[in-house]
Length: 581
Image 1 (cartoon, one colour):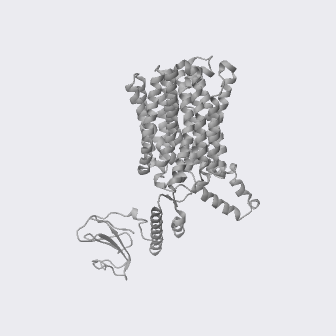
Image 2 (cartoon, helix red, strand yellow):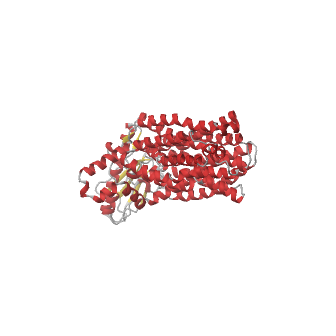
Image 3 (cartoon, helix red, strand yellow):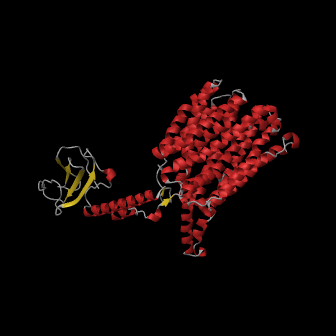
């Protein structure tokens, strides 16, 4: 028993263990990370809204339905190489640093998106045109394999524990701002140029805009510093390595390599990987269904006009942008697990009614359906960036999150437009997207059951992060108090090894409110008593040593040290409780 108690004993925090967040650096980190996500999703918004136009430009010999499928197949091809990007950039970010990898992904992503604007059309070079488009998409997919996981890791490691949900939600705020900018630009070009002008040359303009955005994002990321958690982990690894030569410990050397880290992720953290993949599936199937497939579904499948579909989905994105930081702040207060669970249940229950409303035609009813889907989406978008990095320890956080996130996105998220359009084309059932979302909700609900709550708690492998020095001092003082109580509890258990003891204040049992002086038998030992004085601002619990029944004297404040083991008091106000402290 002594060994068990000592293993459970937690070391008290010191001032060096608690990190005080640098507010200007936190703002800079959140802005730079969110801008990279804005760049990524600007491309997605442009590609989703130009799917029909790009199909005519690069796949002109196919039928309209086949053009859409071919365009989304090229879209999905980028997600095939995303796990490769995660395998490369993730472990690399754990070894050389988050900032360097995020700068590299920004360069590749901006350059490949900018290059799409210069591609020749099918009428100019024939079959070479779709091949060049595919190459650009593959480079984009490879770079984004390290983008989202790195950005979430960077923000999570800079954010104070009690504000991680709010600050992390700004990353996905950048996601939907980028999508809204891309889709809004395409909508304006459609209204100004018309379908013919857009198909002729106007489709190139949104890709040209990506170049300046990428340069701004790269400049901001080059100015960033490494996160405090990574600095501390790197210093610890350096200290460990300096104590022994690398050739004396080949096992540790292999473990520190990229391949060794990947093996460690799947061997020791497979449960967290599966939970992460389930939550990412839930979020990204909903995300890509609304952002990438819904405009095409409304125009090609339901026959709505391009302008109507684009305005409805754009309005949905603006709703998500308005609500997402509020949802992030709410997850800091209520917890990540309740948010995901409520969203999963709502997705199962409301997907079918939402698509029924969208099918009705017109403006009002489809707008209500889009609002329902937008609210469901923001439940996951505002919570994901704070939830996913907390699943893994600092040493492998970037790599594990990159691998799990990109595997799930590639298999289930990015392929959603392709599978949904192909199933609608094959079955003729226009409610297939609703069924698709309901299955995703069921998988997300199952994953949430195994999710541990992380709101307000330090990241795994990292110390506490607070906003002010006063919060740091308070946290250290509370930790020392808790460590002292735990040490005292060990001492009491050793003094009374055969008695039943409350392990903490949380396990104390409430005692009924009594007038005046009350006495009741306790489970500490035979002949022991709780003596509760109800008309005082404190409740005192006295544990007496074993003695013959009836030998305990009446107690009216104070205690006899000869026959009393512990006297504990706690302020209670009007109600009376036993204080097991």
